[in-house]
Amino acid sequence: MTDIMALHVRYAVKKLMDNEFEDEMVDGVFGGAGNDIEKMFEESPSTTRKREQLRKSIQKLKESKEVVEKIIDKINEITLIE
Image (cartoon, rainbow, N blue to C red; front, side):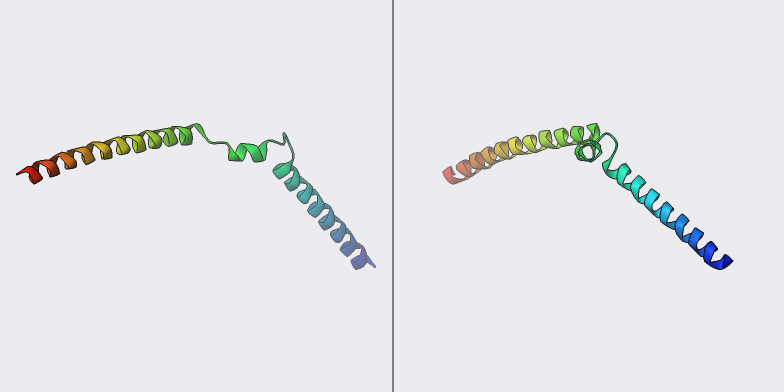
């Protein structure tokens, strides 16, 4: 009889802990302010800064490409004339 009571108490405690843990995890992920998931998708200031630097670098490369194309065209014109 004592073994049955001990097993029942053990089962009840385990069930209580599982339910509490599950509720706590759900509250941690989906509860609270409700903005946690949205906050995960927000860009950090450092990422924003890096993205802007990358955008500027790409723009400079495009401008440089145009300049190099013009120089190559002029060189080709000169070599064709000679």
